[in-house]
Length: 513
Image (cartoon, rainbow, N blue to C red; front, side):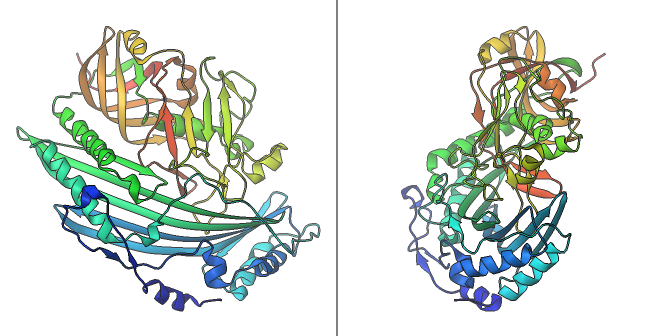
C-alpha cells in the first residue's frame, strides 16, 4: 500500500507499545511506562510506500536511459532522538525523521546524482531523469528483477530504538547524573546528553543486487564540572555502539561516570609541561584519533587517485617499522563504525592498509576500485540519501606490537603521555596536524611523575608513523562516539591504537627559562 507523506507523518503519532525497564532502574520513580511509537517494518519502503521490485526496476530503467557504467538507488528511513538532562531537568528533547532516496548514475568520469524525499513513482522518475542527464553512454539493459542479499548480523537488536520511549530513557539519564554527583563532593554540575537512532536502508544496484540493512545506533555523553579551592575544571566521557537499550547496564554506566569524574578531578593537580621537541607516548584507545585523522584519510583512494595524498605512489613501499600493521575493518560486531554492507550495497570486510610496515592497500569505493582495476573494499559511505558515496573509514586501528606499555615508559627519559583529546586540525593529504590534549602525564627518567593538561601536539601524520619506534600489546578500540567529517559529510566511525612511542614530536606547553 502506498501512503502519502502527510498521511505517513500522521500515522507516526499513532499507536503505542508497552515497555519495561532494567531492574537497576526500578527505584527511579517510573512505573507502568508506556511509550508512544509505531513499529517500523523491516522494509518501510515496500510496506509503507509500495516501493516493490517492479517500481525499483522502472526507476532504474529511467536512471540508466542515457547509458551507465554503474548506477544505484539508495533508500533511507531514519529516526533520531536526542535528550539533554541538566540539573535534573530535561533542557532539550528533539526527535526527527529523515527519509528519501538518492539516485546515482556513473558514466566514465562523470557522476549524475539527484535525490527526493517523495517516494512516489512520479517523483522518483523525475529525479532519475535529472541524474541521467549528465551524458550519453552505451546502452545498457537494467535488471527487471533483483536478487535480495542476506541480512547481516553485526548489530541485530531485539527491540528497535523506534519502540523505546522517553519514559525508559529518562531514568537512565537521571541515574548517570546522580552517580556523577555522588562520586565526588567537588562535582557541582553534571550534564547528560543522549542520542539514539533507528535507521533502515535499501540499496538497489545496476548489477541486480538488492540490499536491506537495519542500522541501530546509540550514544550517551557525560559532561562534568567541578570546583575546588576556587578553581573550576571540566571533563567528559562517552560511550557509543550499534546496540539496543539493554546495553546500558549499571556497570557500564558506572565505568563511564567514573572515567568522566576522574578525568575532571585530576586536572586540579595537573600542569602544562615544558614545550619543545620530545618523545611522545600515545596512550591506547582514544589516541586512535591521530591514526584516523593524520594517517587514515591519506589512505582513502580518492585522495590518492587525485595525487593529493602523500601515499599516492607508496603501494608496496615501507611507510613504518616492520612491527606496525594498520587495519580498517567494518565487520566488528556492535561497533559504532560497523557495517554489514557499505552504502553502495557491497559486503564489508577487513582491509589491511599497512602490513609489517609496508603499504598494502587503499580504501576503495566502487568508482575508485574501477579506476584502479580492483574490487571495492566495501568502503563506499555517505551521510544520507542526499549525498553520493565516497571512500571512507569504518573501524580503523593499529594491531598489537611486540612491546609492553611498561617497556615504552621505561624507554623515555623526558617526554609526555597523551590520553584524551578535545579537538584538532588536520590537513588531509599532506597529514599535517595539531591536536589539543586534555589529559596526559609527564614522563621523567622512565617513570610517570605528574599529570599534565592543556597540551598541543604538532606534527605530520606520515612522518609520525615513520617515527613510531615501539608498539605495545594493549591495542583497543575506543568506545567514544566518534564522528568523521569529510567533504561536508559526517559518518560514525570507530578507532583505536595500542600504546605507541613516537620518537619525536613538537609539544606546545610552557616555555621555561
